[in-house]
Amino acid sequence: MKPPGRLLLVLAATGLALMPGATGAVTVLRVGVTDGSQPCSYRQNGVWQGLAVELWQKVASRERIPFVFSTWPTIGALLEASERGDIDVAVGCMNVSTERLKRYRFSLPIQEGGQSLMVRRTPLALGQAIVAAVLAPELLQLLGGFLVAILLVTVALWWVEGHRNKPETQHQGWRRSFAKDFQILATGPGTNTVAITTRGHTLVLLSYLIRIVSASLLVSYVTVNVVRAPLSSGGGSIRSLRDLEGKTVAARPGSISEQLLLELNQQGGQAAIRIRPLPQVQAAGPMIMDGLANAVLADDLQLEYVLQGLDRSRVELVLRGLQPESQAFAYSPMLPRATAGRIDLAISELKGSGVVATLRRHAIGAAQNRDPR
Image (cartoon, rainbow, N blue to C red):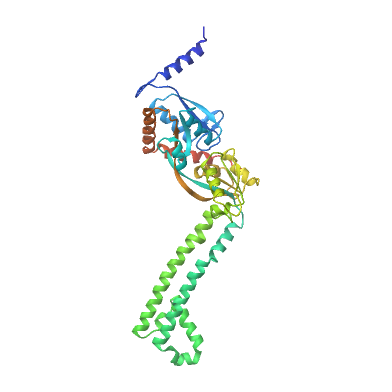
C-alpha cells in the first residue's frame, strides 16, 4: 500500500490532468525556462522567478492550466525544444525576429524590447566626445555660414548707407569702422545706429532674421550632438555597432544579440568581432570590469536590471534601443490551438489591465535593492 502522502500526490496530479477546461480534459503542460536571464527568468533558492515566469504563472492560474517546469541551458535550446515538441510552451522574454518567426510558433507579444550595449565608463570619455562634437565639420560649417551671411549683409549695408565716405569712417579708418558694423550686425546691440535709410533698416532686419535662424540651428546641434550624443553613445570609441570591430563582445548563446554580432561579422569589416559567451546576464558587469570583454550586448531590460546592482561610475549603457522587436513565449507546433488561444487571450487581458507593466516595474525595483558590486 502506498504511503498516504504519496497517494495524495498521485491523486492531485491525476485531478489536475483531468481538470475540465474550455475543450474538455486538460493535460499537464510542459513549460520550458532558462536560468540566468534576469529579470525575465531565473532561479533563486530553487524557486523560479522573473517577469516572464510570474506572467506565465498568472496566465496558468487564470486559465486553470496545470504545468511543470523544465530547465534548458539557453534560449536557443529552449526554442529548439519547443520546435521538436519536447516542451509545450517556452517561457521567457524571447525576441520575435523575422528569422525566428519563420521557424517557430509564438504567443501574443508580452512586451517590446531592444538591444543595448554595456561598456566600461572611462573618466575622459565624455570630455573627449564633447570636444569631438564641438570640432565636428558640421558645427564649423554652420558657424562659417552664419559669419559669411552677416559679412554679405554688412557689405550691402555699407554700400546702401555710404559708410565708406562718412567723416567718422575717414577718422577711424575703414577697416575699424567696417569691423564695428560687422560686430553690431552679428551680435544685435547697436543696430539702431548703423542705418538711417529704408533699405538700410531692411538689411538690419535681415541680419536679425539670420541671427534668429542660426541661433536655433546652433541650439539644436549642441543639444543633439554635444549634450545627448556623448551621453547616449558613451564608451569613448563606441558610437555605433561598427565600432565593435576588433573588440571582444559578450552575448548570451543562442540569443538575438549573438545573432546580431554574427551578422555584423558576415558583412565584413576591418576586423571581426570576437564573440564571448555570456553565461548569465548578471555576469555582464564582472566580465567588463575584469577585462574579459570590451562590451556586453543584450536586451535593454536585462542590462538595465543588471546596471541597478553595479557602480554606475564604472559601467554604463550605450546605444540603447537597437533593433526593437516584440517579445513573446514560444509554442510547440503540437500545442492545441484552443489552448494557445486561451493563453493568448489571458496575455492580452493581463497586458490591458497593466499587470505586465507592473511586473516590469517590480523587476527593476527589486534590482535596485541589491548591493552594487
